[in-house]
Image 1: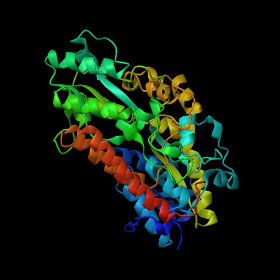
Image 2 (image 1 turned 60 degrees about the horizontal axis):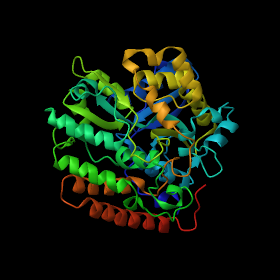
Image 3 (image 1 turned 180 degrees about the horizontal axis):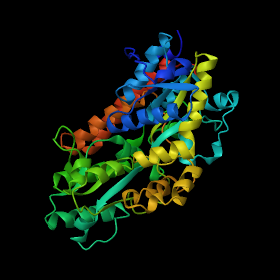
Image 4 (image 1 turned 90 degrees about the vertical axis):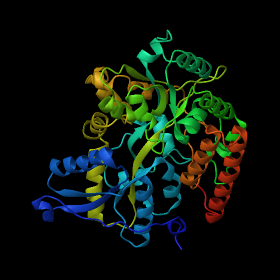
Length: 446
């Protein structure tokens, strides 16, 4: 049984090929992606632009209906020998694909197909997320983000504030003042572990798990219930109880992004990728901006970590398909035809210094629609990347995130004491890690 067969599999998604009339003359290859909705449309358009840019290759691009499904469908397809040549896999799937034995490492693929990739140009926080212990990136970063704090300038002006809070203590005081000033929603929150736990831990240089957050081995154990993160969960739980924070999810009828964009809420923690969504859906005259996430007093700020996805090359395809895929990867990762396109059409950030410098030179960040997005770059580069700030590499991390999310919900809604909820999340998460470790017994992370 292959390593990949050990991973959870789902039904193989059908691939429907389409293309221009001259497509029969082209060398085709399959590219599967996980983004959906407007972001999925951006990816599909990127494929079309590549196909229109030359007449030798055709990317047959198929959305899989979500990041989870893209990973599951690719696993199932590989087992059936019907895998795509290239697939977009989100951050949480990195360790699964590194251990799968089913991928061609990016440096190897680039060398074999003449791709002149400047690996050192990638921002360290991005490069390290997808890198092996030897520092080699195994995939091509495509759409990257990090978390920021969005704030409503007009609502903060009601309490005499002209700048976003820099510490959690200041943030809490602002919530009290906002509520006293009649603001019904000082802080919109949900239970997403990415901005609340993962980003918080990175910028405070705190472990989510032992073994350098899993980078040093599959025997890592979750420990976030014993760090300063426990105080944040207690604080948010208290803010919700006191009406200074409001839970907003699809289940409550309005997401936190919607609550912020319509002007109801003063603060929200979310991805910089939401910058574009807020800009397009904001209430008329909304005066808002992104800022770096707060830190607790006594802590030095460290770099935040990334979210998003990267492009992986699968084993078992023909030389012609790899030739076509190489041309595609060159196009969609280049600053001029890749990073610029993604930044202009989404809220995602450029992934290299070359891309960032190109956009800065062209005045991208000076445009009102993009104002403040450079905050994300500053956050990712707030410090040198260290053992606790290069990311999280835990087996079956998607399931662990789901478990933690459930316990955060229990804490924030008052169903559990915050510390009990965190202890339960760690216990359940460690059970998931031990099962994953057992599945890959004897297999070392690259």
